[in-house]
Amino acid sequence: MKKPVLNIINLGCSKNKVDSEHLAALLKERYTIVYDSADSCDVVIVNTCGFIGDAKEESIDVILENAELRKSGEIKKLYVMGCLSQRYRKELSSEIHEVDAFFGVEPVQYVAAELLKSDMSLMPCTDRVLSTPSHYAYLKISEGCNRRCSFCAIPIIRGEHKSVPLDILVQEAEKLAENGVKELILIAQDLTFYGYDMDGKSHIVELIERLCAIEKIQWIRLHYGYPLGFPDELLELMRDNPKICHYLDLPLQHISTPILKAMRRGIDREQTIAFVNKVRSFVPDVAFRSTFIVGFPGETEAQFEELCDFIREMRFERAGVFAYSAEEGTPAFELQDDVSDEVKQSRVSKFMDIQQDISLELNSKRLGKIEKILIDRTEGDYYVGRTQYDSPEVDDEVLVSKKNNKLEIGEFIDVKIIQADYFDCYGEVL
Image 1: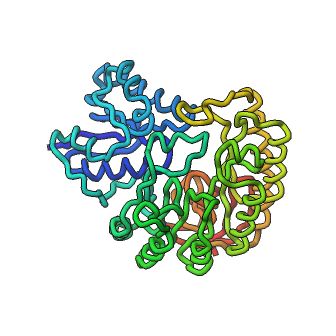
Image 2: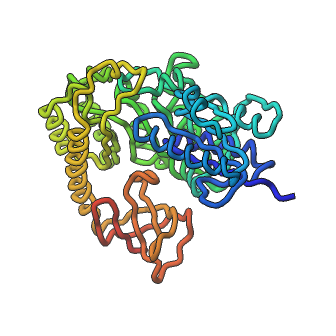
Image 3: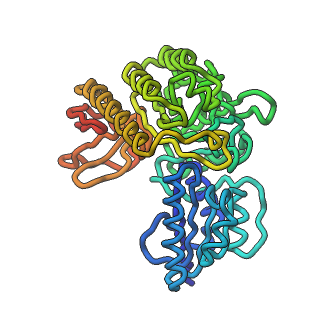
């Protein structure tokens, strides 16, 4: 008997992606699983994002689009889960009646139980049906956050920090490796806080050492740290263990001390600069990726220019920027949102113009160098790969011509950089 087709639509961050992949593993015996498919299907699950205004709008648009398909009978069942429905379940359910059930951020076993019409064990699920290419996967090591940044709704949505037990993570990583994963991308709201909720101290170094011991894992990448209390031992491990990519994704948010104080970041300008310099002193070739917020309540033109000068001085290998979005329930929501949308967008554009020039300058310095890349996919006449300094979907890529080359997806190869652009380079197989 042909299994019904279940389309899981992932919106928002990679942490949502992991939740969807765990859910798919629980449902794969009953359903044929597809992700983000435009083809006809029997059941749709929309895994929503509720982090900032643009993400909320996208989630609502996708729900409404599928609600119309449910209404017309083109799909038989429609479910909504994730951050948006955690925050606004009551409002959504009263307005969008075509959705069969709304779930928030509770364990995915609750969603699976609804679709399977049976009870589910709440034991941690270590199986996954990947939505990424088979050679890399995200590994979510914790949920929630104990930081109380004034602009952030994550603690409201996801609750306090809760670490996934170390042995469970190692078991999950081993299964991923056996199924062909070569690169693990560690994700959390606050990576270095891992373990504090268990016994009052960080176990991030111990966890990464255990993951490095998995033979088939060749790259381990670190996403989403916090500058305050970042352990030197982790930088030493990154420097000394060849499996750990020389890459760190760590949102700094701003550089002006008054803005950082209003954001409740617990760190000032001088400490921020000292932290960036410390990271680079431990790992001189590190690709430091950071994100920033412009248009925070009270941000003056002078404070924005201070941020621009900081970006010019630090020359981050990767940097992104968001316009401030006032989120209900956060401390910053009580502040006057006094920077106009027009000014916010102007500041976003100026920031990215600066970063674009920095990116071109840094990429131009790569010309003639030999770099190891991991082939992710093909696109037109090119193979598309990444170095250890680049995370999938958000960072630079290296394009290699298909002409006279026969490469495999998930293969590591050495290339010589022969052309540089703002956000991509071109490589020649050695």
